[in-house]
Amino acid sequence: MSQLALLGGKPVLSEPIPHTWPVITDADLARVTDLVRRGEISYDASEGFVAELEGGFKARLHRRHALATSSGTAALHSAFFGLGLEPGDEVIAPTYTFLATVMPIVACNSTPVLVDVEPDTGNIDLAAAEQAVTSRTRAMVVTHLNGHPVDMRRALDIAHRHGIRLVEDCSQAHGAVCGGAEVGTLGDVAAYSLQARKTVAAGEGGVLVTSDRGVYERAVLLGHFAARATQEVLSDELAPFAPLGFGLNYRMHPLGAALAIGQLARLDEVLAKRAVNFAAFDELLRDVRGVRPAPRQDHVTRHGCYSYQPLYEPEALGGLPRATFVAALRAEGVPVTAPTSPPLHLEPFFTAERTALRTFVVDPRRPIYSPGQLPSSEVYVASALRLPAYSEPLAADVIEALQEAFDKVSRHAKQLHEYARRSLEAGH
Ligand SMILES: *Cc1c(COP(=O)(O)O)cnc(C)c1O
Image 1 (cartoon, rainbow, N blue to C red):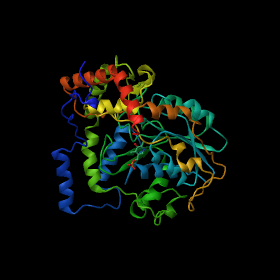
Image 2: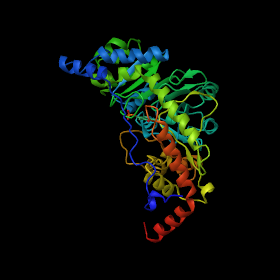
Image 3: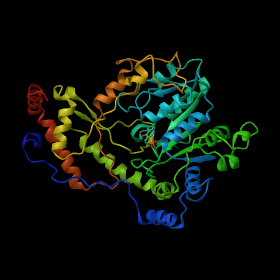
Image 4: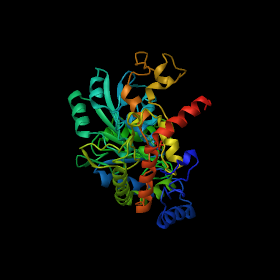
């Protein structure tokens, strides 16, 4: 067996695997340069490419309303605001997700109630979510993490039985399909990020979709004051507030919309190409000791292929630390990483009784968490590995090299134990 690259041997992959994202075509560029030339770099209402992008989301998702926003975070804030949450209202949320799934609930003066996630997908544990329902629960938010959809049939069933609203954070799952229905079509309201890493990339931007007129009008009022609000906020209850709104400006930049239009049109093509790589990763990892291919539950009709996340199983390698395993793979030229951010319930906002926040109402009755309380989220964070979702099918020799690198590292577990022990003694 050849020597591990980490210990001075020759790496299996001598060159980095080419990876271009976002893909920007000449047509995308032409849309952007046309706008810049015309000086069309700000819209007041739903106009031009912003309106076209919103139309694309509405048509794809069969939703009555779409609202482009300045970020996915703004779309989530608008979604929660759109539900008309009040102080003291509780919203059930997964503890493992990007912070923007949860903290805008606080910015609505309401109370996030964090629940555990599944140890393998990292998605919200729906049984735990149902147990967390109280008389104050108004909504539940789910994140389709890494492109793997949450079981929406079950989530909807819980929401209906308890009379609570359902918010979908689709920021990592553009185009994913669950039990035959695309994500974003099932909840009361869904939010997408169009940040540069996301599968439809505007650079910065977001989209909210809903078929609920009340949710939409309130979302428009929050971040689209004056022009758009006056045009679109028409209900007797809310129309008088349209000229002032709430003073936030969550409008999307027209140049971002110009970039995202082509990306939305190419979404299915991109997902099909990424799916080829995901299948190849499944296959190459199948017999690697210490690694389990990324999970895929039965309700997944189409994976959103945002990030490929196999699970590390240290028991199979005598307890070898994940960091050592990852370092050895990286030395071989495999661009694997491990998640770095902890579950949200371990952050000071959720572990400390008092916060320094002043403006927002921080519910004195909110739950305070401690380590170990939502254990599966900690298992997930400790065991997940990440491979990039390459947007062009990888060449056969690259797949072969990846397989060889995983095999090589896994077979050298013994040397790696020794290396880890020496590093520890040397105080690294
Ligand atoms: C990226 C992301 C967001 C936030 O999007 P921004 O556009 O960066 O504000 C929210 N939720 C999830 C799950 C995300 O991955």
